[in-house]
Image (cartoon, rainbow over all chains, first blue to last red):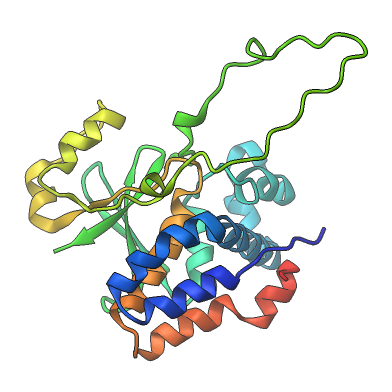
Length: 140
Length: 127
């Protein structure tokens, strides 16, 4: 199956972001209306492709509900536009892009880095994981 | 880790559908609209760490949080829409913020290049 997504608005956002945080804030409303969901779809497709390419490594770590069924997992947990990510998806997405993820669990405030050993100064998004949800988190 | 952030988009099953008479024209399907306007995709402002524990109680009343430690370690939280795409949307937002804060950094170029990588694009059939 071929999927078409329009990444032009995302690249326009990145270009605008080079003018600084104020420019980024000003550009976000238009991007959200016209490009955010395509960008999300792109990430989901790229992640699914990565998981298929590493099927031997991924399959043993699938949730019990999918017991070895990678395509079922991709359909139910990765490509669906209303299902968030779990550690498996976060690990592989961070391996696909030069941009790490630091997840702080609200319960205990312990931090986990993706990929493992992420350098302290590496580009990364910091997330707060609350039950069933992620928020953007800003450290002091 | 739970993996659904769509808890506020549930609908009742079936009982709100109008009955259709035989031979009647099928109901027009409305054009999809974004259920989450800008303010709820990403919070317009950062919720200060001092207020966040109180804020969290609205969504997760039983979730324990060490308010003192949280405020000590963090400036605050920017909300992300609870539409099931929270992780992916936050990833994109974070990448954009890094570029905005480090426009001349080679790593910003690397991030943009990764989104444009031909191997990834072709693998996804991306236009």
